Image 1 (cartoon, one colour):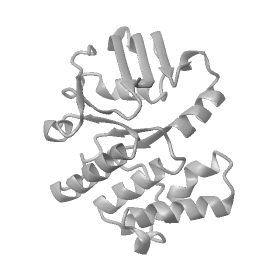
Image 2 (cartoon, one colour; image 1 turned 135 degrees about the vertical axis):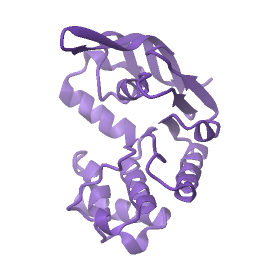
Image 3 (spheres, rainbow, N blue to C red; image 1 turned 90 degrees about the horizontal axis):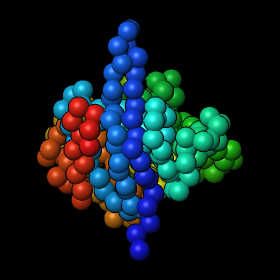
Length: 222
């Protein structure tokens, strides 16, 4: 039987904008099983980034319930939420979000620091990941010394640092040329074959069709 890793039950997320209420996500029900490869697609302003933040426990629902590995995250303290998020979910962002003053190696070791992994273990794991992603020669380079594709691969290595169950990627090829984009997609497909649950948020249907399942969102509704 497939194991359910993420579940949203009747989730709404509202924001206050001046005197109005923006209903970014409306009554969302969603189940994602362990080992799934899901693409969340929708036009700009459809609510897909808000949905990603809810799935990734970066944001809490206004109404409804969100379960991560059968734990209701709505009832966790912020410190417990940060711990579970750090262990269970790896994030890949469109704009890479690398720290510009840290080398590739240091960027990858950072998530492990917050999980109290020893310095030697952090460095060994980061070197191994960068080697696997073809970046052994670039580990001591700053992000400004790397190409877009290399920076995205460093971001993927960082997302995998704590060996998370779920990899959540927000427009992971949005800032890349088509060749680098295909390479990133191949890496994600390979991770999925190895058992990782992959969730990509994209408006690119070419990319979405590589997933096993497509979830469409429009006007905040799945």
